Length: 595
Image (cartoon, rainbow, N blue to C red):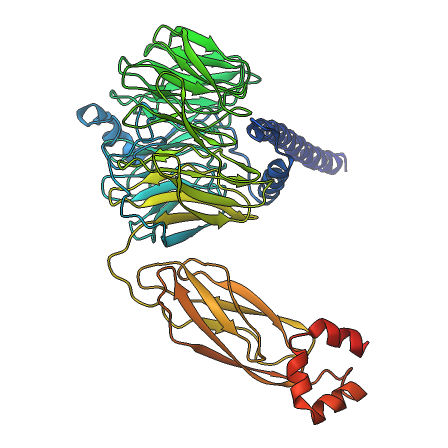
């Protein structure tokens, strides 16, 4: 008896202790996730602060997405400090010293093109007509720059936490997922390794085939695009630890070389001078000049936070913008050469043309002579602001994206070297913060925040040959009730991967053009029929170069709505069909009359 009671007591204590451990462990894990989420929301507030002030609209969109992703996915690895080297890569990494590890010599291997951040392409866009030759539908917004390797493959990240690799024709090659947003552009090493940072705190090294080489855990969100030195060292900044910022130097094998803490968070992208000095801005208002061994060379104070990159002219002069309304030119010894007022301030790269002109985005695109005087300024239009860092082609054309109002749209604009507009295209319903890049064939690439949770990579450029898109696929109901709205899904594949739009004839005297869609992308169109009849819907696709497909057809039968069937008005329309056709153009009038 006593023995049985003892056994039962032991079992009871076992279950109690197990249950307590589970609950206690769950509470610890929940608390950890809550702390991480609070920290990332604070990071988000910092990033949503622009020279014009805090953007409530952007913060609302971003925070909503962040909370949804946190609630739907496992977040245990967020902000992890764990360093991972895949076992299959150990032998390869041991031979890294035998390989070239500096920046790849390609059309656009990193943000702002090169380690000096000139954003100057050696390739002309003189034959680029500003036609969108393809677009790639991303899983979410593309907020940063696009890079291109020496085979023409294109790399970028988005807010769905993926890094993408595309073929030159815009089709997907592979994708690699992290546990955090990708809010930084990748950088490509000479051996093809792709380096990029994530909001999960990891700096990732990805092989050209899309497999992971290693992950370096920084411990805090990364929104700083990396730069690669000639010895293979990778530099970047983070938003932490705590209220500090940290500059990291990481060896090409994924081990830490050194770090240096600043007074506040870092989202600025580092650049490297000819003597190996690393320049990076911080939220503590300073531009830091770091020696290659991790010691401070000097720091230059501005009047407000710095979020944008620095750039370096051929004579070694450093340019940096601040939220204090100015862009600065700084001598090699850290003293100020000149300052230039740029509206409410800037977070774009001070891009440098071959003639030394510095281009800075803000409320306008400012063209500044090397001596700090005005060359010209270009006004992009009412309620437009530039966060996208300008890219410069060999023919002198300047490309950048815009924000229209508060999340009311975004464009890509091309400006001639004399400050006149060449062309512009609206490519987003929200904004375009992504910085353009330029391919070897003169194609201009830029990302967009097209709509809530939807983004595209857009490619603008010439095309040698063209074939009409395939007849559209139409999916939707074959019958319904008058007075109700019905959704139809349309898709068409273009042989050259050109974007397409659809012309829809609803068969009742009404027709419309859809918005532009990527080749193969399914879009939705809706329509309401007022009168009973059998309608022949016909749809054709048209690509961006003007070629149209053959028609596709779908028959839809709309029986008379029983609620209206016996009304005097319907009987009149049965006797006078021309009135029915006339009122198809005035459904609101008919609706009012029938009530």
